[in-house]
Image (cartoon, rainbow, N blue to C red; front, side, top):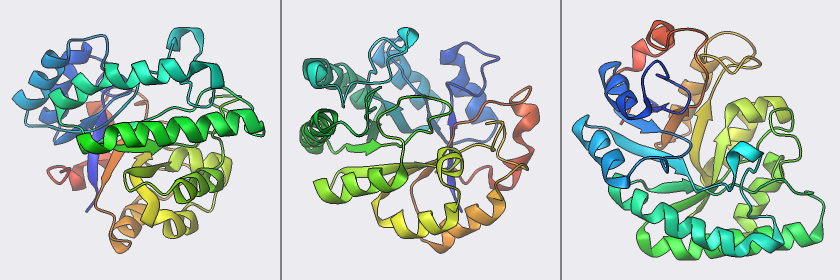
Length: 260
């Protein structure tokens, strides 16, 4: 049965961020993820996690100036020093939460540029080498160009090849089913082909990015498929509730208590 992690950047926003940990646990989740924890002290984030018996599934490395539209800098050749600093910033949070995977964002860059491609390879390799002694996986995620125009990593086949070609034990693919459906479709076949390289999965309905029920994707089938494929990682619920978070958790009730 999939191990679901509530995404606290999108879910339970009826509460201040630090109170969302308790709200998620009360709703039956035993794991959480979020985009970024850096507005709060690492010790406080770790305490909220531990006080509520939650496992930290994932968060992102610092992406640069998010409010100004930056989405990471791994593919930006003049931002390698920023990448190094981002690892240093994230590590205290990783230690406080015990997280075992961090998402390295690529940034806004031309995916066909040899310079950007070389910068990306260098950044991903460096991040993986730095985080390996900490027991942390680096995950890279293709993001659809409708939501983030110009994002460097926008193709699942390309992302899969980066993971295979760079060949680091702690480098994995972050497979967001929402993004895959928008970019390619054919989600089940891609899950089957890429499963050995997948380190994290995320879900949302398509096209609304609301609760994973209805619309284009048959999630009950895919949840069963993940079991058939032997996936034992987390499934991050990176969706925007259509209304009140708890009121929209009907889809989750059959799985509550099995999230970790």
